[in-house]
Length: 250
Image (tube, rainbow, N blue to C red; front, side, top):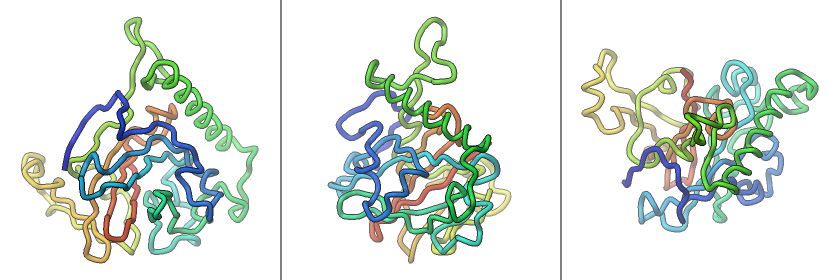
């Protein structure tokens, strides 16, 4: 699989800020209330066998504290858990959420207060995404919304920190139990960092019904939103067409 790092320029395989209508299934219009689409990735850039398939990097508004989904366990299913959730990619390359809307705190079913301090924080994230979108339209690259200048020049951020290659060991691997539909195996306890580097995917294997997930990309949420996870991690399983997300926080 092809691998790239520190991507700061767009090409024909990457489209920044796709519309919600392009990204989400019309069956679930409420998804746009919970996610900000950041960039679409043509999977043929990573594997020619995936020609015609496009996935989308997303930043959820939540969490304000803790992990996303940590306070909504009553609404979880086999595809959702704290810090983990999944979509199915339909024939139109749109996401269909495999969980319930109650997974998100920002819903009527969870009696969300849309006048809360947390909501103000989320609205600021949305404003920052609009600002990032304006910067890309104007300059052709992402500019940090928190620190827009560095040494008298634009402080340029990555569209993606990593694309392709393998999974990497981090806090995300053990921060929360993953959804029951999926299986994850980790390297033995006590494996040293130098030994991890010698293992494919740092010794991490994630699968659904015996079929492996492939690492597609990661990026810091704050590159686009001014806040968010240190790494939004996107994985893809081509047999079921499931796209799996988790987050690394430091």
